[in-house]
Length: 542
Image 1: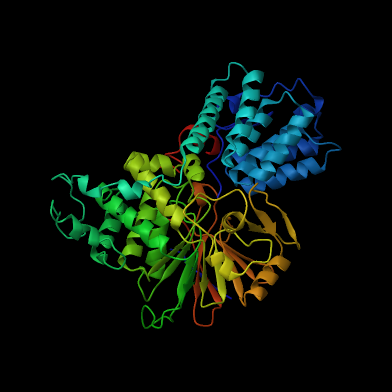
Image 2 (image 1 turned 90 degrees about the vertical axis):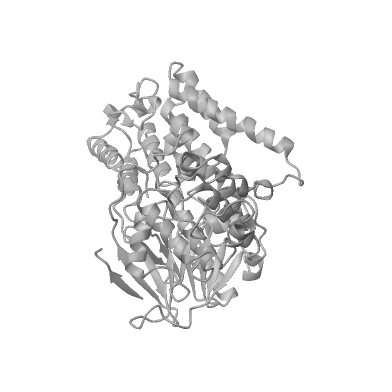
């Protein structure tokens, strides 16, 4: 394995802290702890060394050093004869920041057992349950906060949001039928008028008019979209401008139909020719990009613009968190329609409705376009393939491996066109994480499993594979090799959410299929903070 250096998450930190615990931007979290219901809940009762570690953990959490905060809280807890509700609750908050919702629920629940009148513990457990799309459980926790703090307006807002989600889910289930027509089957982009003052690019160089709509739609078929239009759109995105809604609608409808025709497991070959005389033929694999458009542009600046001789595989989580998610996903989809062999996409756990609601993509699309365009994005996400195999030897998927014996043929046949279920093969591929010890364990995220090196070895052997490449987790160096060299995590969003300080990385796979890594740092972006479009319950995760 080779590493190249190039000199060219997880969330933003909480608002403040006090002795009782770390606060977020919510009313309940800003309220100091009363420390009246259980002596184990008082900071003054902590040994000096434990208190010091707790305060260092608070500081690390405020400054966005989430993993350091978790380590400090864990060390503080290890010094105590019995757990402390405040430290457990603070560690739950840190776990939420890195999407370890399962661990957050465990810590918050333990804090509640110690002190049943501790509102922050209910608040944090409710936050984690909401992230796992469990609004009924979250509603129960926020209701408890409202009882403990009747004047807390924020808790009432969160409770109302959960109540709304429960009712929406019940209504959707009541009207659901197999005859429900997807929006892509009824939406008519031709009805969208392009005003004379639109100064953006056109796929046909000029705006087509009524009577020419079939010609326009034909331009958005796979391999037909002019690359000149794609590059002009990308340049426009760099200037914080958008392409017209009519073109976005055509793009999404045609992408949905194209992805629908693909198997859930793609087979990718190394190109026969290199992008230039100075390089060998290869495929570039990138991990999470999370709406960090200007860092994606930096990847292209370092590694070359996508083409049939310079293909990329982006391994999920294109959107959410970063506030340029629309620009990222539109760039990828435009490239896919212009040259299907220049870019491949696998679905991540953030290409889902609930994640988009919480982490900003829904709000961003509705701010930049409208709710219909967001619904079309969701249809596209539901059809994106779940995994890929490079040269029949390197298996690539966003999260990880199933913990039961599974063949590539079974993965290829996974039915898509839906939101991921809570368990099963699709859930494992999108959500699972590796663990250093053998066997399987319940996921720290609350969805899927953690899989050990023995499971990786068995899967690779069963399917005559050499290597697993996955993403899904921020890594300080942009990548991590584990499981005896058989599992690689690659993460391509440097300084994730403007707070983590990590490098980004991508991997080259040439004919020898040996991974060659390139690392890079973040580049400047316009002053729009991560999660800027997150609204409602999304505020819990900033």
